[in-house]
Every structure is written in C-alpha cells, then in structure tokens.
Image 1 (cartoon, helix red, strand yellow):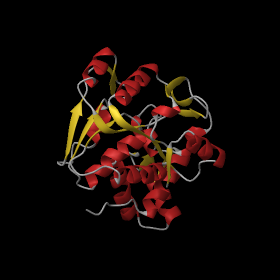
Image 2 (cartoon, one colour; image 1 turned 90 degrees about the horizontal axis):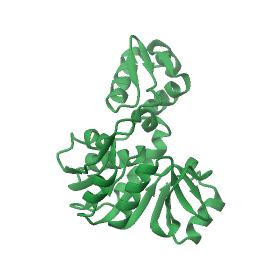
Image 3 (cartoon, helix red, strand yellow; image 1 turned 90 degrees about the vertical axis):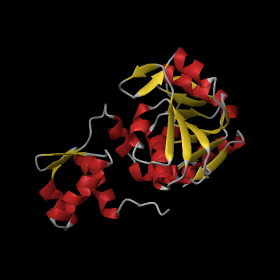
Image 4 (cartoon, one colour; image 1 turned 45 degrees about the vertical axis):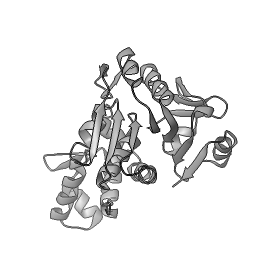
Length: 253
C-alpha cells in the first residue's frame, strides 16, 4: 500500500507556524503565493493530524505541554525515521512501542501501510492515534496514568509486562552519553522502558540527532541493551563512531 507523504507546502506551513506560534491564514496564503481555499485545505489536513490548531482565521501552534506539540517539532525528520523503522516490521508481527513522538509516527506508518500488526504499548496517546486503522491491534498495558504524557507506569505496568515477550521493542530517548548510554527525563517511564527491554529480543531507539548532544536526567538503557538506533544524517561523526564502537547497528535517514 502506498503511504501518503506530506506535501512540500504542508511542510512549509508547519515550519512557518512553528516559527510564528500564531499567524493569520491570509498571511500564510500571501507568503506561499496560493489561494486561501488551498491554505485552508492544507490546514485542515494538518489539524486532523494534530500538528497545529485553527482559531478565528489563525493557524496556531499547539501548547508545549501538549503531546502534539512535540510531534510537530522536526516532523519531517521524525517521519523519515518512522518510515525506516516501519520497513523492519513484518506482516502479522507483535511488537512493543513505548511513548514518544517518533514512536507515534511509527505506529501511524504501520497503519497507513495496512500491515496487520499487534502493538503492545503503555501509551494511550498511541492507542487513540491509530484507532482508525483496522489492521492494527492494540494491547494496552495497565498501571498508574500520567495525563501529561498519556502513558501508564508503575508496579502494575511492570507486572503486566512479565506476561509478554516480543522480537522488537521501539523506544524514544532524551539524551545519550558515549560511555553510559541512553537517558530520559522521567524516572517512572525509565522503569517501564527497562521492563519492556527485558521482554524483547531487540531494542531499537528512534530519535532525531538533536538528542545526542548530552545525557539527560535519568539513565534509561546501557549501550549493550540497545540493538539499533535509527536517526537522521545530522548525527555527528564522533557520535556515530561511538554507537558503532558499542556494536549498535546505526541507520541514518
């Protein structure tokens, strides 16, 4: 099944709205030299994807506290990463996906491709995002709900995970250190990632190259716990070398 790509104009709209935070629809039409009808159609598609909001003749960026805000940042880069990851998922596979904006796009790509895939996840955001795809089966883990990130965490989540084993786990990350590995900014989510990794044969990190500048707050996984990293070609040569030195497969898109 052919996957519909975002148009170049939609990419430009998203970039402009991210820069301005709030911009008139008329101004967008003038900048891109297209009709207001065309701009409104593009904005409707972007709003349906959750990448921006429309309000009284304006296009507005989502709140930074909204998961859709993170989804819109570096969207095209994250989409390429998600597409590369989706190619590695076989028809009728059962996989685990943890929360994260690129992980959301992976689930969406699998749905767009029409692959029959079962996704085990702690992310209610992902579950809602792909509910429109009949080929996708979602198994939601239980636990303590974090409304800001729309995930479940805690002892119950870890206990539920013990009942599963999968070939592939896909996660995001918030930072990296060449010696100690991958980092996150949320202790409770780190505990779930670690529990997921224990129930998976391979672990793939999906992240744009900006996350490799420094470690974050909480250690997520050691280098020897990660099988593969899929990221963009903005990754620095020394960072790429450190990943390969740790015997981590590196895919650059």
